[in-house]
Structure formats: C-alpha cells, structure tokens
Length: 447
Image (cartoon, rainbow, N blue to C red; front, side):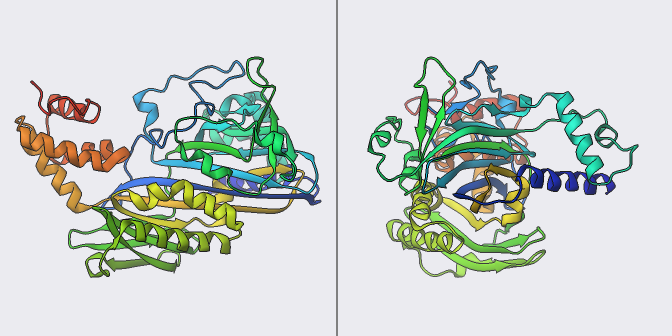
C-alpha cells in the first residue's frame, strides 16, 4: 500500500511540475477517443488482436515504419494480443494567434502503436534509464519520502519505462485564411474513417517531419495516436442465456451516459442509462426491449443522441459530429451486443496523463468506453459448430465460417474460447483457425 501511495504522489507531482506556473495561454485543447474491449458473457476480458482495426492511411506512422532511424519492430502474434485498444484519440488545438506548443501524453499501462504527425519522442526508450531513475528519486524527495527509500527499492529489479508520445515545436496556425495549408493535408485512397476527424474548425498544426525524404513540414488538423494495453476499464458487463444483461460499475466514480446496444440482421435497439454509481450493478432484460428499429433509423437516432451527450460534456458540435461520423459504422452498424459509455475524466487523466506547454485556458478530454460482449447464444452456437466441424462436416464448416465472418475482428478470441470449451484437440484447433485467414473462394474443408 505504501508503494502505491508513493507512486501515486509521484504521478500527481510530476503532472503539476510539467504544467508550468499555472498561467493560461490563448489556447484551447479538445480531445476525444475510445477504449475498446471484448469479453465473454461471464464478464471475463478476452485477449484479442486490437491492432487489426479499421484501416489507417498509409502515411500514419507505426512501429513497422516509425521513422527517424528508430528500430523497426516486427510485431509477432504474441505482441498483437491485448485486452484494450485505445482507438483514435485525436487532439484539436484552437488559438486566435499563431504560437508554438509542446504536447506530451504518457500511457503508463500500455504502448503507443500509431501516430501522426511525426513525433520527436515515442515509446518507452525515449528516456534513458539513468535519467528516469534520477527524476523519480528527485520526485520522491519532493513528496517527502524517507531518505532510505528510492525508486529501485520500491520497484526492485523491474526496469523503469515511460511509454509516451511527445510532439515538440507544434506550430498552431488559426484556421481562418489557411487555404494553402488546407491543400497540403495528406490524403490516401484507403477510404479510412481517419479523415472524418478533420471536419472541424480547429487550427492547422505544422510539425517538422525530421526526415529528408518527406515534406519538411507535416500538416494536420489534429494530433493522432493509438495504443494497446492489458488492463480493465471500470465497467463489467455480464449476460445470461435468458437474455438478462447486467452492467456493473467497478470503479470509484459514477459512470454516466451508457448506451446498451444490440444489432442483428440490419436492425437493432438500444437503451440509454443516465448513470451507474460506484459498485452498483444494474440488470436489463433485453428480451423485453421495444421492437427493433431498421439499421438506418437506429444509426441516425443513436448518432444524434451520442452527439448531444458529447457536446454536453464539452466538445464543440463539429467535434462531436466528427467523432460520431468516425465511429458510427462500427458502433452502430456491426452485429453484436455492446455497451458504450463515457469514461470519467479523472480516469482518463490517470490512464493518459497529458501535459501541454503553454498551459491551455481550456482542456476537454472525452473518452468513450466500448465493451463488446460475446453473448451466451453466440458462444453456444460456436461450440456446437466446432464440435461438428472436427469431423470435417462441410455444412458445419460453412456455417462456422459465416458466423466467424459476422464477428469480424472479434472472431479469433471468440473461436479460441469455443475451442477450449469444446475441448478440441490442438491439431484440429490449428485447422479450424485456418478458416479465419483462408480466401473466401477456398473450399470450406481441409482436403
């Protein structure tokens, strides 16, 4: 407990020290993003491949093309699996005058995986170990820790790492009269939803690319980053075979604006909960919900409701619309049962400590949690199908393939859970996993 208290004090003090003298600049910063997890009907979080998400433009940096002479990281199967996907946080800056800004985000419980524009510092290796130890010990002294307590005595042999991204020397260029810069924003033919985030009145941002082969300055309407981590958000969702879904607030702060959503066969329905207090469980009988709405109507209604909530929390209307347009196909269009909810600001500040120099006069940070649920009905169906498919039953293989396709990026963890429940032998598991990657024109058997 002493260790946790001291480390918490370190984090608080470090944030205050980085914030400067408290003076407020002619600067406004607004951020939105999401945290996505996948879990069974029993509430157990499942490991999944969170890097296999919506396609990003080719110009976005990641660890296969990090730039600046950084070591390229070839991601292995093990490194791809995680419990949380921090998806598309974007930071908008607003100012009436041109100015230069530094912005740093730390991700103590995870790893930054993608970013744009180029950042001078990314990843845990950006701060040398000796410097990290010296800074940590200095902070310990300043919070009043005894002289015989050091960061190494608290952490033992565990190395000190700081997962972060730091953009330095950001040129903030007010949006008005910047037609030439607007034409310099990079484009891509991928059809990525990334570009929906540009539809705001935010300032243009210019950063040195630090690269001789790229344009000397990279322009964008926001700072973009993504990451992965293995930790739990403060909401647990359980679902029973009889259709009763329960949401439990496992955190210490009230969770607000929850949308419980079911989509299937181009139709769906949702229920909105205003709040759930800490350590409270609330049950919903999904079978008693009102008749489903056509998907187009459901998406329109949910988009309006979500945008209204986001504006009430501090986003500008165009920012809220940009966020909804970025995610509505995934949030409201994919088959499945999920819960969308607002994460508390304190949770965001602890999970993603942010420092901006000069200190903005306003900082809004909105993170939406997404809890995707593997329903008991879907899991039972998968168990029956993999049991039949062990004998190379072509009908079962075809049905299994269709069911997995509907699960999209959550297909692999769902299949893993079903194979374990059905006690499928290892060799057969490998063959059934091949369904996830084999071309659609390939026969659905193993001959």
